[in-house]
Image (cartoon, rainbow over all chains, first blue to last red):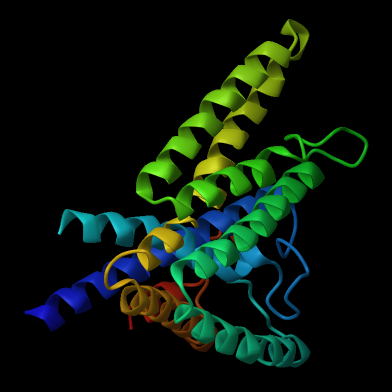
Length: 67
Length: 192
């Protein structure tokens, strides 16, 4: 059962991660910029690198708190 | 995850990606306080980037939508709060939100009511770019924090990697309202 829940959680986090990606893409499009910054060559800025984790981290944390 | 389409972009991405991944892997095993400080720095830079993007959106000749100090300042406040745990993070968010609403309501003249959109963007930035990222510190602080954080980074990173290469393989465009580069393939392969 542990592996089943782990898989289910991974699927949920993958969806939430993509949502975070979409939110950042929408903001960049609204602001008419390709990358959020230039700090990481090839990746863009920090926000480009962590966009997937931005929504996934709180979702994961509170799911863990719920038990 | 930004899209890198040309070979030179991909090369730069790989060159930066490996040291970055190695650094993150090493930091996973550092004490919570060190990870918390690193997440604070990352959040601070992310907050600056968001402020800068919003400033560009309003044009070079007008002042930026948000004061430059707002989101980076709240990143420091909430980052320190996160080091104290969940209650500290939530208390810092509350102080930031109430402080920002108070500041905007007091300093926005009646003739500039459109500036109230800055109020909304400020609140959004605090929650999306600062508060949410700092949950990484809270996860690290849990009893099984290191493996849990490793699991989160692994799942989301692999989802990003599969989405990036899967999207390029299928080449079917969607999400055009969001970004011309978003593809059906990205959504499908992210689940793999």
